[in-house]
Length: 386
Image (cartoon, rainbow, N blue to C red; front, side):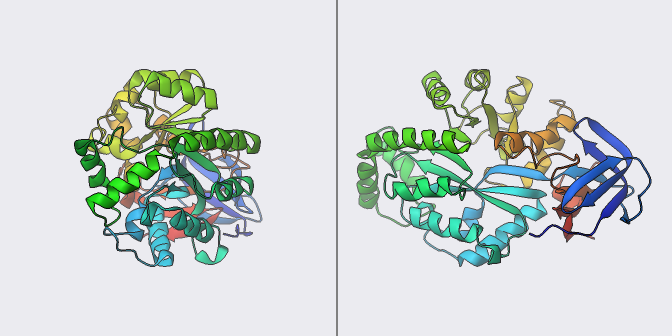
């Protein structure tokens, strides 16, 4: 998106700044950035827009979301055209107030939706300026340890800046006994059509690549450190997992299983990331710690959409309603803090001069996305409701 060159002054809104609310504010936008946030009259040369009665919030920064998979593959083995799916996803993001989005693409040993071939197509389309995406779209690769093929291609994406966030995943079942494999197969069949025999062959083959995959993890971590790309762990379940993450210099702890593990992650400097649907639903769907529990224990840094975009807008309201943290801090969990964790905090997540003018105009005290009146990206109103 090309930033607007027309200087604008939004006047009268209540603005959420990094230090708190600013009433009856004047927010100046020029060349796609905030250039002033104060209570002064509109200066000469700016076109004034009346935003009285509305709140102006930083745009949401979502660094882990994979709901786009359902738009690509609404039923197992049934894929829709990728261009259509990405446009549908872009509209869903805007409707949820998400102005910066990391497509969390699973780079797996599976065929189909989570294959390297699908990742390859997504990376290409997301970076194609003609794709028509209006959200600031970036790529987060969720790399599976057992996917050892085409390693040089993954390194190339990192070296060229096509991938700017990497998480290290291992979703293989801990054993190949019938009961464990059956549970694993249930999830796999939501994405692909395959027989029990095909699943066993797939998993057995993947298990045989684990050692090589671990060696590649080490090489990827070194590459990311050299390129300044943040690395995330995923589903740390033991103190040993956290110790390994610390050894790797992991910057983001995605979905740690318990409060003690989250505390250990924060102790070495990692940001703890959890899913907003966890809070909205009242707990983790896999039995890990709840967001409310984490917030009460002061081990929550960032929220993401995970698998449901609207939950990310609603979550700060819910945290405040439950008395777990002030709304002003809770909104930072979906804007300032994830931007910082993903190393884009110098441009995103705050309403201050010099930052990208990504923001929402919302009706006050309405906790669902239908409160959004306008979504701005780089100073342009890209969606206006009502």
